[in-house]
Amino acid sequence: MKILTVLTYYRPHTSGLTIYAERLAEAFAARGHEVTVLTSHFDKRSASEEIKNGVKIVRAPVALRISKGVIMPTFGLLAWKYVMENDVIHLHLPQFDAPGFAFRGRLLGKKTILTYHCDLQLPSGLFNRIVNKVVDFQNTMAANLANHIVTYTQDYCDHSPFLSMYKKKLTPILPPVVLPPTTAEDEQAWLAAHQLDSDDATPIIGMATRFATEKGVEILLSAMPAILQKFPKAKVLFAGQHENVMGEQHYFERLWPKIAEYQNTGHWQFLGNQTPAEMVAYYKKIDLLIVPSLNSTEAFGLVQIEAMMHGKPSIASALPGVRRPVQMTGMGLVTPIGNVDALSKAVIEVLSDHEKFVGDVAEISKTYLPDSIAAKYEELIASL
Image 1 (cartoon, one colour):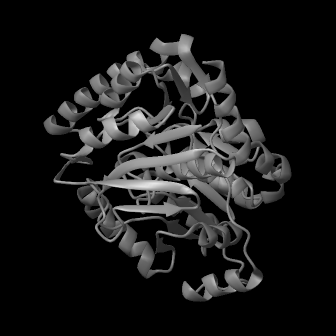
Image 2: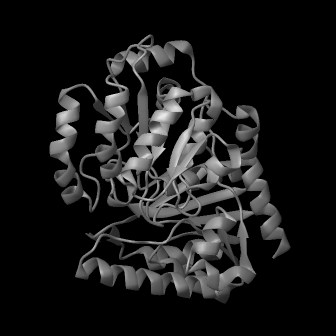
């Protein structure tokens, strides 16, 4: 098959959505399909067109940005070209341009699949409310025109006001998760680069995400005093972009004074964006992962599975979808959304009895193999 994957941001942007799209696109290519990714050229340091791991990546010029979105004047012309050239259109929502691609798919007789990653909930404010309404309308148009919709879990589907309208053409498929093999030398080099000691017995709390409003960083910050009372040497390693995150500068500035206090006392360390190989070293270093997300913009948390693949439990908020990795594996605890006291108690419980929360790592790795997930998509496409 010839598969066109369309999303607003692709690599080098790092988010759960872009990682999912990259893994699936490369899995399709490895299974013999011809895969093209059409996305925005938001980072001028990247090539406008390239082939990476068997996937052709085409990046459309960006004229300007609005909030977290981009305006691409030539995107419509590129849409006609690549929809005509491909057999299947795979869209990743939320995405402003999705209805146009779904309409072209209908008009040209191409099968259109939507992967719905999350409900969009931007921070408060008149402008963001308008953006939310516009994106909701665009998502609805795209869903009506698409042949089928995929989401991560039935749990998320059952609690999403948007997805609940399309249950008759919706299939839950777990996300693709894989990390590269590394050597002991790689891991030692990573530890040295971040001035970390492999033999240090300090409890390490991991948080791996963009620094964004919906991620609940302030919940972990508020839980730190109780955690430090029990584990005075505990430290947070924050992996992911924390500076100049699109649309999140005010959020970072609001939390920075408290983070700076913990940073100065050695209880908090930012690592920045990490490569997949570096994330392996990261998961091996931490003792547990925290996913204290606050709203349905978070639908699963791929990092939970990555951590579990390395024997590390997760503490997740009780959001639909986000709670499922812990519930399915038993590797960790689920806490009420935004509950600081519950989070601190959960961290203390897991750090105090780590072995109690270790599950079947081999089975977890097998379940989320990108090749297996791509095969499920192929079955779905064939059924259409």
